[in-house]
Image (cartoon, rainbow, N blue to C red):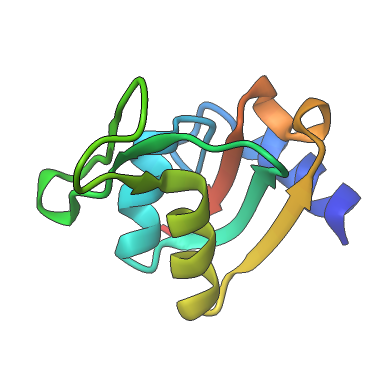
Length: 104
């Protein structure tokens, strides 16, 4: 469940198998590398998912060609067979808008 995965994420923090960095998480989700994703409900983080760059790009506000990177990461994670937990912002591990456990 959510509690076990949250503990697992904290265990993997700093090993390269977990991240709270949204641009990195978006890129990993596009590559099918996200096993478990935690996202903050009701939040939007505008940016550009750039699979070739290896990282997404965050923007200060919505702009032409941008999208909500939290939503994109969630959709990509689900499409690649990962699990997504939508939580209140204060419950997201690693104190950000998103956190992920990577498959590799």
